[in-house]
Image 1 (cartoon, rainbow, N blue to C red):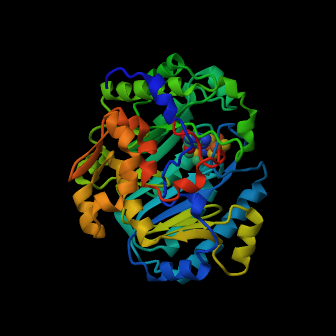
Image 2: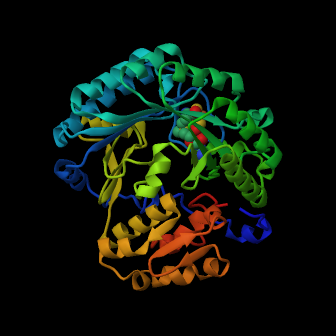
Image 3: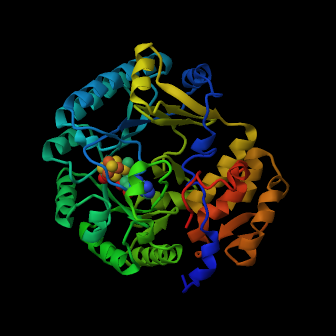
Length: 455
Ligand SMILES: C[S@@+](CC[C@H](N)C(=O)[O-])C[C@H]1O[C@@H](n2cnc3c(N)ncnc32)[C@H](O)[C@@H]1O
Ligand code: SF4
């Protein structure tokens, strides 16, 4: 990638979705009824991907945009396990639990805020209900290295976990202090060693750029240090600053956040850094070693994007279990309650804790295919989309193509009869380039408090 005049790019810094779903979560509503959701669960036959949300954390990292419940009370953790079990019992009444499970993911919060015994209890319970596990199932957990011990790792090993994602965020002490997350590199190194000792073959570390006091120089140093961990994958997320939604983000002095120019410089450096260190870019925020299945999936057209980021297991029916979890089928998204009392009350009434979602129209369905392909591959196979959705791409997306004109003129996007592709520089603006294909975008224009900034 050649040197870029980022001053020109600053105009693209606007609010926009990260497209972990399409339609985005802002379109989820109670118009998608409980009965419709149950019908989908009862009639689906695809393999299963199970997501279990363990929402608890001990203390707040101020940048955190995840659905978290802060607690220091063991009884809250224990009570939640009992509700998870009841939720799983209700699920088992509505879906065929002999469908093959090809993916299992513990997300949070901090899943390892739970003791080894509790984690064992939860996975054991799920395995007793869902009986058919693929021998190649991807089993993963998000881990905060500050809360991780050998007993927990033994439980993960016993249950066949093969992927772990560690939160690091930044290695600069000043930044760590400001984000309220002191985590020395040595601690992360120990956590990574522990995972490797138990045979975890795929270790991911998460970084975030755009945090207070980060500079190009400080981030360069953090990336250099990250190489001592020899991660198989690295996620480098663009900090989603949404203080109107997340109170702790209001603790940041916004003048200490890096400017869009600096963020673009960091992103460009990050891409070059990983390329020179033997990693390849996967999608908009992931890097993987060239033998990683994510990377191999790009060539086969099998890389998909979902709520957990990028995956090769695209065709599965994602079932969200636990507070706030989101499920995804071919034609729907379904979300559980974000409110613990409501979550518990729904389960107590014998129902799943589902509260909102969206059923995809034919138009949503084709736009989802286009946007997800763009987010995963930085290109669109126009011919295949036309065939699979019986549309004429140029006609169907005439409006989007007009909006993309400025990107084409800047040679960030090229379109011919067969393919729409992004130039390497265009990939830096992937969210902006996906937005013209989003039919709901107009609704949010002018409303500042919807999405985080794209740049
Ligand atoms: C749900 S968190 C769980 C990880 C675990 N609790 C930890 O902190 O290590 C998953 C990842 O989301 C990312 N993340 C959280 N808040 C974010 C934000 N506002 N913008 C961008 N990425 C964010 C962080 O990189 C974090 O590691
Ligand atoms: S980043 Fe992780 S540990 Fe920190 S508040 Fe968010 S979920 Fe909890």
